[in-house]
Each structure stands twice: as C-alpha cells, then as structure tokens.
Length: 481
RNA sequence: GUCCCCGUCGUCUAGGGGUCUAGGACACCGGGUUUUCAUCCCGGCAACAGGGGUUCGAAUCCCCUCGGGGAUGCCA
Image (cartoon, rainbow, N blue to C red):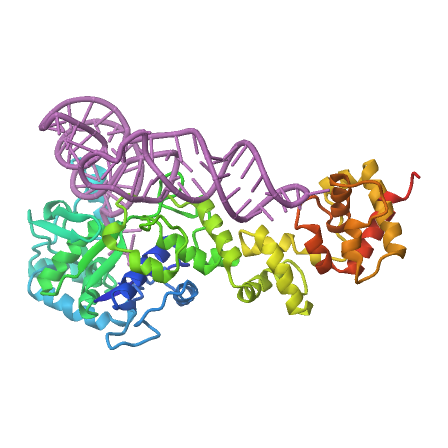
C-alpha cells in the first residue's frame, strides 16, 4: 500500500490540508504502508519554494513523517510536478496522436463570449467542442495567427462511471455532465492538475488516494484519463471538508487556519494533531485524548463521517489545555521558554529548576503556551502594580490595614527562611480569612486571582515580597493614620 | 442552473429496525474542592430537519420537500 499527500505550495499549510495529511499518515502507519509527499506546483504563478518549505516544516512539526518526497528519494521521483514535465509530455503526445486529445485554439476571450451566449445559462456552460475536429488547414491558419493552443481531453459521451469511494461508497457519474472536454495542457505548455495527478499516482504506484471531497467531482475526469492511457486506477477515499461556524468552507475570516499560526500562538503539535485526527469520527470508548498510536489503531476510513464538521476552536483550545497540563514538565518548560521570552522576560537568566517550579504552578492557568506571558510576572517582576481589582481592594480599610501590618512585619520579624509561612500565619493583625488573604494577595501579586499563596510565595522570594509590600505600603498604607 | 455529497443536542459525535424515557465530549448553567481564580470532581440543560411510505415496530430502510456543502477554472 502506498498513499500520498500532495499539497500545492501556494501558501501556508492550512488546517484542512493538515487533516488530510494526518489521515493519510495514520492510515499509512496503520497499514505499514509508504507515505509520499508530492509537491503539485504546476501553477507557476502561485507556487513558491518558501511555501513548499513552510509546508514541510509544518508537517514535520505535526509529527508527520513521509517516506518519500522532494527531500527523500524513494526511486519514484522527482517528487515535484514541475520537474516531471518531460514525463507528462510523452503522455500528451500519445493522447494527441491517438486522437484522444486535441489542440484547442479558442482564446480566453472567445471562451468568455461563448459563455455569454443566450442559450447557455452562464453557470451551465460546457465547452462546445468547437476545436474537436479542426482540419489541418484551420490549424495552420490559427498557428499563423500566432495562437498558442491548449490541449483538450476528448470526453466520451454518455458513459456512466462509478467511483468506489472508501468513505462515500459508490458514487455514480455520467460523462455527459462532467463539463465537456477539459483542458489538460495550458497554452504555455504546462499541464494541469486534473490530468497529471492520475499519471503521477500511477507512476508513483499510489494504491490509495485519500483527499478532500472537493476533488470528488474531478475524479471521473481523472479516471477517464487513466483509462485512455491504460494506467491503473487507485482506490479512492474522499473525506469531507472542514467548515467554519457559518458552514462555509473554513477560511481565514473564521479564525486561524494556518498551522504555523497555531504553533506561534502556543498550541502544542500533539493537541492540534489529536484534534484534527479525531475530527469526523469518535473512538469506540468515546475517549477524546488519544496518543497517535491509539488513534492509529482505531481510525478507519469507513468510520469517517460523511458530513462536514465545523471547526470548533473552543474544543481545540480545551484540548490544548489538557495537553499542557499532562505534558512532561521538563519538555513543557522548554516549550514555554520562547513564549516567556516573547513576553519580554530574560528567561535565560532564570534558574532552570526555579523555572520548572513556576511552570508547574502556572500550567493550570494556561490553555495556550502564550497564556504564560501575562501570568509569569507574578514570579519574575520586581513589583506587581495592582490591577483595577487589586487596587480597589487595597483602598478599603482592610486593605490599608493589611498593607501596614505586612510592612511592619517584614521590616523586623521575618526573614528569608520563614517569611512565607509567617506571612500567612503570623501576620500581626486581627484580620483573618478572606479579609486578610485577599489584600495580601493583592499586595504580593497585584491581582485578586491567581495561584495559591502558600505555593507561590516561596517561588516569588523574600526580596520581591519585601519590595512589593513596601511599594504597597507607600501607595496605600501610609497617609491617613 | 446542472452534477455530486450530506442532514442526531449550539458544536464534534455514538447509534445501522425493538436493548433509545437517544449515550459521550466541548461550550453553557448549577454544586463541591480551592479562604481567590484556574485546575480537579459531581450534577443539569440540550438533538433524531419536515412530510410521506415500508414494517407489529423506524433516529436507523425507501421516496419527496427543505436546508447545507462541493464541483462546474488555461487553480489545486
């Protein structure tokens, strides 16, 4: 068994494509098969090597490993369509000489005109077949005019075709309504996707084509090409496309669609992989969080839902939080580091052990790695300027009282080794419970919400606590006696 | 328009003629733990698109309607 993921390098890796890649990868691994990465870059205008590289990087980040591809020769290369033009040419010559394809000299403008013809509903236009049987003379005349022809595939009339689809089941088509003779080679000599995809699949010995169902209606065209060339037909499985909340194909306006952005926003590859891999079906026991191996053992093309899922950003976020909480601490700390740095902290100067302790507390508050940026100040800032909530509590009588008590206390009676337990248990004030704790929290952390004080205090350290207490004393505790 | 695919809680889904007063998860709401918040635990709300068949019996099978998506490119 050989499968392939065949992106066109016209931009970043979209989560929808990532899902296709993941499904291919999982099915391949499950069956001990070969997975091929093929770059479909025949759209010269839009393809770029940067895009190709970013797609490969994103796939690797997701943990998808391909066995053959532009960077890994497996004997079936080249793996970029732009490097296979000679191969396609021989097939085109054959189709042409066998009259299964023909040159079409209609210009784009003429085609546009034909579409406007009154008897054609604009949307129901089918190429008339005008150039189907040009005489040698007519051809020469067009050539003399300097027209560059396209090559069209001659679609036979009224033949019914059944695609045996691994997800959709048997899907029937009739050649009379697949849109007429389609172009297989552009006027600049570059062949188009619908034509060469089947050649590559055959030459690369692809046995199973697993792709989005936006390709389903193209499949009969590809099968027609295969048959006229005597090429083998792979088995097909067309999965549904991911939709946005408005049920339109997922796009940028719905939210983040690029894998790269998910990464930079602090999503873990494991979580994105898990979410995307489980979209469209469910594990037998209903589990949601699964290792790739577990998904692999349970996933099956026939289990994939036939209706299109709506991308649930909230659920992905929830899943990411789950992964952050269960991740191995050492590795998680590494993942957090760039996000801490990005928030403006000299994280490299922080003692590793200390950092891990901080992470082990803050991870509970993070759904995204980037969430740590607005929390870690509690531990690393010298002063935590009270936010609005903290400010209002510190302005109350209780707040003022606590600020004073803490100030007196830290000036004399406590030191670095006992401060955290003392601060909590032996504060010289009659206040207790919430009325003691909330102001104290506000003084130390500058906010009313956050980690448990008895855990946070030792990590914040005596010096910082002292500074923060002094700061709040100056700001709230002084003044009116 | 035409062709193709698809309709179970708001969302992802389980279910494949009786075991369905339709199960799980996210979200939401309530409660517990946490002297805060988050985490964690417990509970609740919430769906078979509509209409016809078939059948003793339909969420499950068939048809129609409606709704959604895709294709219809010298894009992939």
